[in-house]
Amino acid sequence: MHRVVTGGAAMLTFFLIGSRLGFAAELDASRILNLLEGSIQSIKSFDVRLHTTLRFFIITERTDVKVQPTPGQKWPTVPLRKRMLGPTEMARTRAEHYRQCFTNATGRTEYLDQNGQPVTQVVYDRETEKTHKPAQARAIIRAPVPSLVVEGGDYLESYRNLYGRVEVIRSFRQRKNVHVSYGGPNGNMIILASDLDLHPTDPSIDLPTWGFQVAVDPEHNFLPVRVERYEAIDGIPFLVRRLSVDEFLDIGGGVMVPVKFTSHFFDRSPGDTFGKRGLEVVTTVDVSRSTWNTPIPDKTFALSLPAGTRVTDHFRNVEFITGKPDPGTNLKELVANARQSIPFTSSASPVPVNGALRLWLATITGFLLIALLFVIFTVRRIKQRQRGRVSNENSYL
Image (cartoon, rainbow, N blue to C red; front, side):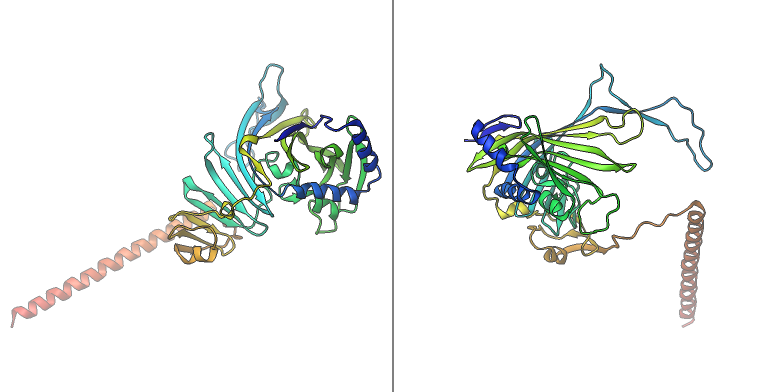
């Protein structure tokens, strides 16, 4: 029987809370990370349906300022300004729907339409990411990108990761400037803070120029209840994002999982909106259609591609069309059965072509076409003359 626990609810007895807080007060950063790691590892797998709502509180609009085009510009740059919503204005909203599966560093993410059907499917592990868009018959094979979904909509960021694929435990253990404090309404939150480094020298540290504060709660198995990200603006730490876990679900066996979390993003642009909340992202788990710590079939993480799919393979620098259905397990076999394999250089950028060069290329191309037509015409005339000569000779025999 699942039990929903809100972020602010006191579900334990006073004595137990007091004893946990007394125990927590004696912990250093290393032991707190060990407790957090144990709670993270207790969530061995998940297959969740997520509904994410974005609300925008800042409006970007044109101004009435007249701007003359600069030399070389065909049209002048339209000046824009940002402002907060007025008292009677409604925030613009956008809805996103996802399915996310994860176990043993292997995952699957599906972008769903309003009917719950997958529009884009992604499977990945630590080395490879494979994306398929069925409607476009396109697929991409590449190294994993930093983030797959809108920030604030990734379930892994609600308890395991700081940003995208960067893990809380790994990142904090990399850093030397981690310190512990206590906060929250009742002083029951343990806050792990890692200051940002304005001049990073260690390339092995993930996101060194970003600072983080992670508040864990003994009442919720030392899982994160708040994660804040800081970046430097003019050398001063600036709060960019705050994620708060609003609800947990007790799935039994002493395991809790987050089921609702909210992210607030604060504007970094200079002007009247600086430091103001510009975006709110609320993500809710559809508990009735989600599972945790249940076996996930291996085929869930094998993305099959139908025949005729155009695949861009960034590992082999080749683009091809699948010749037969691909079960999604053997990339070498996929390439071997391909049609129209075309090599490409993924790191090369297109060379800009200016107007003069384009005109010169068009002129040369036209000249070559005329020369080719002249050669064809000349060869035909010679063949006609030879046939006429042979005909005349035969008439004398």
